[in-house]
Image (cartoon, rainbow, N blue to C red):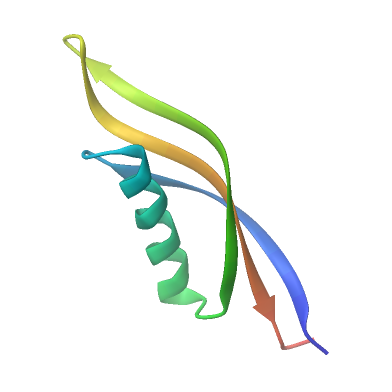
Length: 68
């Protein structure tokens, strides 16, 4: 029986929020190859001298856990 599990993560990028989401999904997929979806919860950024220096995307990533 397959079970869908969800993990909350933060992806980061110095380019864009979209790239931050891609970063997060890639990192999770490296350890969990059965990723099935992503939900972006929040967009944030670090700012220095009036410029965004780090884009961050808080997200939930769903994956299949077929071990159960």
